[in-house]
Length: 324
Image (cartoon, rainbow, N blue to C red; front, side):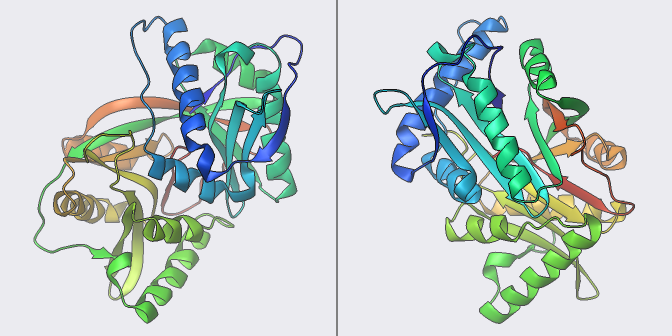
């Protein structure tokens, strides 16, 4: 999620500084105000974007680590932020936002360029973000900074449903089995998307009790994984969706088994449905989900910096969510 505008002369701000966990309430205010204003300008008057779950903010800040950037005004209050993430060679930005009174002042350009520079220094070969496809201002803004549009990411949901067998979960394994599974999962992801590494996200999700990772095996080998968050995305809400943030499978043939495992995990974790964000590079998976009764809920436009685009692997499926 990214909300910015075209710019006027740069406002007086200080940064970037590394975001702190105690700044989550202030980040929520900037986030909500900026995206509420974005929806208003898009004609959706009366929509108020709610605050994000503080636990999800903590995940975003700790996952970004040194890439969790904030800018402050002369009073020391947050004027803008950019959560910049890197999973091996894959880098992406989100959420990022600029406080409403600073929009159009050049702050948005500074925020994005600093994120790009950090990812380049860290060795990312993929640099991207997602934005709302109906928002021409945002698409034009990012295009002026060197980003090019790719395919849509389609959010689909399936209702929770019990399966014949409970899925294998990374968090339920003993220490030795868990370490072996993490190593095998890391190898699988790297084989399907060279240089990608989701290990930190898998471990952080477990340590913060936000969800778990579904493992799919064939003859004892891990052939699929799905990192899932069951914690509500919005502050004060009940569990409604099991959100899949990362997914890797050796081939499309594993899709049905993975969907059954995810729907069962949703049922057992007390969530009503599974939400999967399928990038347009995987039409077979999309068709399988629609055939299974999935509903289309949302679309995002994936944009990548020129020369730092994603490259689909020759085999398998890798869905890497550029949202939290």
